[in-house]
Image (tube, rainbow, N blue to C red):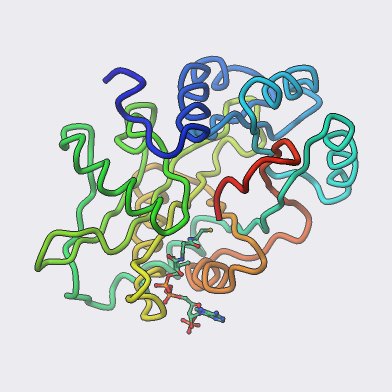
Length: 267
Ligand SMILES: CC(C)(COP(=O)(O)OP(=O)(O)OC[C@H]1O[C@@H](n2cnc3c(N)ncnc32)[C@H](O)[C@@H]1OP(=O)(O)O)[C@@H](O)C(=O)NCCC(=O)NCCS
């Protein structure tokens, strides 16, 4: 699949996805780099290098900072302000595989018959991935490129729930490994892209679809820990994540840095 084909979103989102895909090999090998799929990323700005961070912000327009110790956040904010950029932080939730697996088993073992589960793979039609990406975007979640969602760049857990009557997407969730061998988080999977059709929210569907991918990340991908991010104000997302066995980390934050005038990238 050529790079242009699997991209999804507005011009900025597609440009960032293309740049992240083009640099995927390099980010998998560079100390301090994170393969964040929808943009460049770093979990150690010093090792990754501020010259590189500034170049990415200038040329691409966004970069994500991951698992930054709270006591370093103000320094990063100040450094970004000096180059006309700002960062929007998420809360970080994470947990060890045994606790997550136990919580998720309880959730997925409750039978639900109100949808059809699809776990798309590279052999699925590109149009199916586009439907899932369009659904995420409608829910305000910036999608990942198909190359990543399909497992083409490493192991993934991707769950899509469909309405059995018309085959339309009603929920999504996704997990993969963003950190490289140099990172202390290399055995941690990230999970996210959780979205539920708005008229079906508040009935446990978010926790269910999230639990499906978390369980798969532990059992099939071998994740030792899993992390998810959410804004403090996104109460439904925070609660859903906690129901799945992850806990709020008060010592670290993750976020997206962008030029001050840029539009917020995702929820
Ligand atoms: C986040 C999202 C996936 C949750 O899906 P969902 O199906 O509603 O999730 P669940 O029903 O499993 O759980 C939501 C929890 O939040 C609670 N909740 C929902 N809205 C709430 C609100 N405004 N205030 C307080 N609690 C709220 C629900 O009661 C439930 O908690 P409970 O099980 O303890 O009662 C869904 O809201 C969504 O698609 N939002 C838009 C996309 C998004 O923000 N994704 C997350 C990006 S980080």
